[in-house]
Image (cartoon, rainbow, N blue to C red; front, side, top):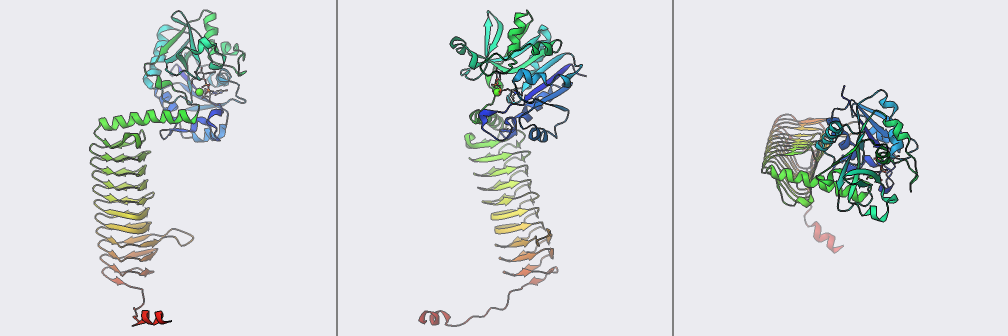
Length: 458
Ligand code: UD1
Ligand code: CA
């Protein structure tokens, strides 16, 4: 069992977000901030991970359901960060060693810095170690007050004197503590401050007065300890992560025509010589091969795009696969379970859902293809609709290799169009079409000579 234990504070209301959602569930570059904090925490392989929840505790707990190894404690009411830590005492019963305290609203902390904190804390044998940063704009953060070289105490913005407000070294809200004697000491913190809250940073002054060792680790990149309290800070922090991801993509050989408007989530992988045009969003667990071209206004979520695929402007692609050499768009919508096989083409105003479009097949204009299995070298004419829903359930359509579906046809599922079969334009297909057959359902055309002239006379 590891002798490092983690407590993550996430009970606060996040008043400054002005949100009905718990603050820590707001997404930073596509991922809830608490998920980022917990991922970094897990990499430390702690013995225990306690999450302190409070405001909207149920929503938060539910959203963390899938994260293994968490113990939740509820802080109600929320009386400050020191009070929050005390609510974790029971959950840590009997734990010895080091407690690392993380803030659910500081998602940029790197594992390297966290490891540095733990190492420094261990090697100095301090009672507490604080991560600090020297920042240009310290507004809103607790300031590190030093006496000589050593940290003396931390003072919150609201309680700081004008001189203290000039200090640029800030408290990250991330600490390591020796568990021995910690909770007794935290109980000694009073709420004597502007907010009438129990401030955990007060522990530093308290320890120093008692002659206990308090150390600091100052990060070289102050972005790492950014706390998010407002929507503006949420956007700034997302920007930092986006820029980082974009830089990594470019270093790996991906062309970003306009990095400022390129939004690629962390886990996304993109091969070399792929070009991303402006205003592209690529989210979730998406993989894009090499030599692809993704044009403007495209959003791709949880999808796989193989080498040499082209996605033209303004497509939405979710939970779908595009095989090598395919072309999709402009203005196509590929919904969950769409699979466009080698060199197949999907054109404008085409919607696919749970549909396979076989190798070399084409659906170039205005179509809805849902729950369909379409073979190779099939041509789907403009305005083709699979009527897959009968009002009760979804039904499948099968279109075999080499079939030709004339424009403006409705295929009433369940239905099968045989190999090499033809469906005449404007046909409503209600029954299976055998291999090689032609299906027509429209009546015979009648021309009434001179009709226009007669009408005009009236
Ligand atoms: C806190 C620190 C400040 C530091 C800053 C870094 C205190 C008093 N101040 O200020 O020195 O510079 O973080 O970002 O600690 N929380 C609870 N229960 C509570 C109150 C807060 O769980 O009763 C949680 C919040 O959900 C949040 C974290 O603790 O995740 C920090 O609280 P917040 O109110 O954001 O503190 P800051 O004002 O940012
Ligand atoms: Ca904060």
